[in-house]
Image (cartoon, rainbow, N blue to C red; front, top):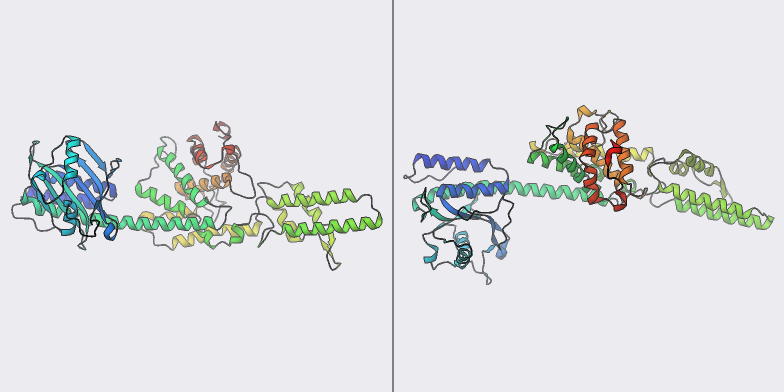
Amino acid sequence: MPLPIPPPTADQDTLRKLIGLTHALSAERHLPRLYDRIIEAAQDFTHADGGTLYILEGQGVGQGLRFEVMRTLSLDIRAGGDSGQAIDLRPIPLWLDDGRPNHQNVCAHVWHQGTLVNIADAYEVEDFDFSGTRAFDRAMHYRTVSLLTLPLQNHAGDIIGILQLVNARVPGTDRVQAFDPAFEPLVLALASSAAVTLDKQQLLQGHKDLLDAFIRTIAQAIDAKSAHTSAHCQRVPVLTELIAQAACHADTGPLKDFDLDDEGWYELRVAAWLHDCGKLATPDSLLDKSTKLHALSDRIETVQARYAALIAQETAAAANQGDARLQARILQLREDCDFLARANIGGEFMRPEDQQRVRDIAAQSWTDHTGAIRPLLTAEEADMLCIARGTLNGEERQRINRHIDVTLQMLEAMPFPKTLARVPEYAGGHHEKVDGTGFPRGLTGDQMSWPARMMAIADIFEALTARDRPYKPPMPLSQALSILRDMRDRRHIDADLYTLFLESRVWDIYAREHLLPEQLDVQDPAAYR
């Protein structure tokens, strides 16, 4: 990026130092570290003992200068930026209560004027209010002398922050001196370079924040389509990251070299949040199918109405004929009706003898209001009530499974940057199996990345332990881990990742935060190895 032409007095070493600092700033991608680099570079360049970076925030008369980084070398103060130490100070207001520009504070004044202010001794200046500076000095047994306050002006001419340097020191000593005016053009050049870099990074961060918000909105929209899978799209990212963290800490086995940098972590998070985005195209009637006979309404009520009519018919017939077996017959009909209501709810497994009982009931008949003889269950109702697992039949499950095809179509159509290029592969692989029998592409384990295999385990474990599925009670950890172990044995999930999941107690960490107390029935995972 271009730099202002330095004054003739600047030597070649100074120029090289300035160019080196500029390049170092422009190479920094992490915003908090960039804040730190700006302060460090300015202090190093001017031999300043202290420095504060302020960033513009707010709109209109509510604008202010937020304390972003504070450093004082002699007091060993380092706060804000990437330090992990928060700055608990109110922003400097840029406007007074009556709406006039704030020229009382030197930083606010520099923002309004757009020019630097070089003060030789803060205690001898009456143009600005330095009461806060004096209070700091008294509390810290410090003495603020020289101040250099500069605007951070971007390429569009907007001032996006203020840089204030404190107490220039004579090189090699602790003696404080005024900031040399001859260096002002160079410091302004550094500030300008920092502002352009900072503006670019803030713009990138803004785009990233917008993408994050958009992604989370999509996930929330998917979860909102069905109360019975609510928060699934929010919990799978939690599990995926827990597994990835365990993999990053592995020091033996095939995952010992697995690692993620900042960009890799972000790529994984985006994929995890978007892994079910194709469900936006799935009919709500399928996502929200809470019982086997549910369509626009639960058709079990129609079946129950038939039973009510049949019981009334049987009662009338018995009264006319004096049938002594009436009570036993009515009891049997009521038991059958209750059984069908239970079968309609669904579950993890339906016994063959229960399926046969449904078919036996379907062979019975009743008389409708026209006098026509009708089957007690239609063929479709009988087939639905015999669904062995969950509430979906084969065709409905295939329609649900097609969401992964839509997910891939949506994600592969998006112009992801290079740093997010693997999002479609990560998100699109969570229904693949390591033996190649999964969908949509039938990939084998060695054709899948580690993150895609991690997401598959996360998706399964969340679904097994979810506490809001209408067709099953909240599954305890013992049952969920048994199912995962069996899937490992059948080569449906990656064996090494299952071992990592078990041994690093990812299941336990997740369960304590997201499951009900009654689900936490495992302490020692040895039985599930």
